[in-house]
Image (cartoon, rainbow, N blue to C red; front, side, top):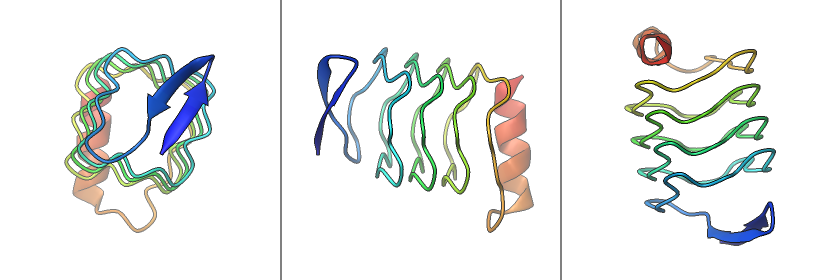
Length: 106
């Protein structure tokens, strides 16, 4: 799906290359970003509620104040990701996935 975000067109789909993309404030609710490359992307205040981020590369992404409620982060790379005050709901996810998420934020 093509989506215009902050004046630029992006392809939002599984496996998309969105490295360094400015997705600040984007509504990506229920987006399928499985295996997407979001390394260094700005997702500040983005709505990722219910999004599929399985196996996505979120290394060094800015997730400050992002809504990740119900998002699938299974096997996502969150190393060096920046986040404060984001909404995360691990309901339905395994405890180990939650621990992996938290480790990735350090």
